[in-house]
Length: 222
Image: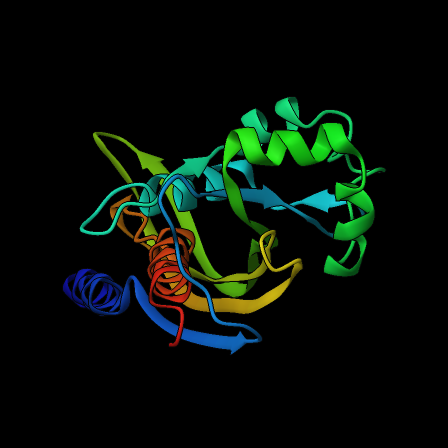
């Protein structure tokens, strides 16, 4: 009995030490110089990434909130506000697919005027997702006279992979790309009660991508 309890305690301690362990990778590619002038704003839009799926709305919201606060806050227009203002030009079937289509879009005087009115300088398209990958382990639970509990260990891998494509509406060109990939291992040890130790890969990806985007847009030469 003592050996069983000791073994389960060791499982819990090992999982506690490893829980939330993550690795992150950031890449950047710049095509043009950038900068933010007075009255200019950024809009962050979700782009379909595969099988017609959109990047999670909470990730888009997280990026917007992070960019609009801090020591260098940027004016950010939300996805919903922008699409409503520019309806129907940025609906899934009508939105431009590349910067090469921007001049055609702006040839419509109504669209061009709305960009002037809103001050949108950069459109940032976000593609990607957070997915649970392979895992393993087992937790068994039992109930007995006067006692019960769960014992064991489960683990799984999560990957948050996102890419931001930046369009410069002033230069009518692609300014570049910033991407981040955060991988983490989550654990759920159980010594009587299961305790989830979740690796916050999506939150970390949001923080890193928003920080890099801010530098990309404001500094212009990074």
